[in-house]
Length: 458
Image (tube, rainbow, N blue to C red; front, top):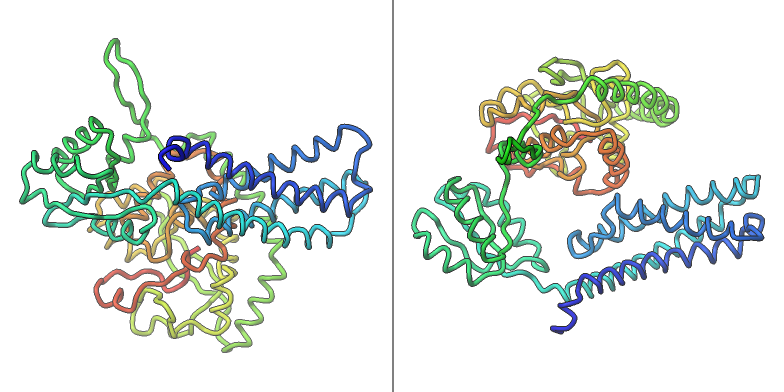
């Protein structure tokens, strides 16, 4: 086992290569057995195989399929399955171009199911291998009396395969020397919102002892983390531009929004008509749901969605959507699960109130309340609100406002056109993931005066 631990990265690389080869072998079998008209008589076949391998690796990387041991096994299988699906769709079009005709899609469809089974088996085996050579890390939790950020410890404790939270220490009751002595006994520490000076000393000690450290970033950390290194003579300096998007970036983003919102409005028109008819037939109420939301520079606009709740959903005031919410209509459950209730927002994008990728637009009440709790909340309004975004892909509907704020600021600080494209592609991954639409608990409305929108967030 000690020998395996020395070569664990090489072993996992070998496992990932085997998965790619297994899926590629499945494609070659489908191709050579069913699409003879798309086979070259020379070395062109190598180009087809190479393009398949590259596409599969790109989609697998985008969807995080190679993050074996980091993502849960069902998410790894789901990610690989999406990679297989999109790769096969593109390769089907490529084979049709080679044959100069629309070839039958059925062999590719049947083959895709076979490949999904293969990646499911391979993913399970890879997961077992990973945890054989990567035992769970023994972790020390460091916190104070306020226990700020303690949710992180709870989340880590739920991933027993990776983390074992064996002990905790309160910095308000323990001296630094004793804390350092405890750190020596563990492989990693998780730091929960303690004083900055203590945090700095602990992180420095962990660095000296080659111990892993996990901590929740604050706004300053996020900004500094995305700053630039510059030299002032012989002095290294961190420089943060803090300017938001450039004029060129805003122009490119707006052009993209106009072109693709028009395209998607046309493509999704049959689904929109079907949704409108179903909602009207269900209870005879209005088809659309409109609500004031906040976008760039604090501008207020009317967001448009297909109505998924009963007409009197807010008769008792705005409330968060909870699990098994009885205000959601029968049609609403379906369109929310498929995210079809979000389609009318394409009109908001075309109009210019929103963009495809950006922080989700919050209700006016939320902005006031969150800004009182987190003064930095207004920083997310440096860019337009979006249909999808960093917090929607990596968070959940019931993710805390503070965590969503941090993710939105990470997006703003790291913005690029390529990042937007990546997040749009990743949106397809979360469309049918139940946890991304998970509602709040029933107690959420009792314990807070926060008025989260009653409709599902994309």
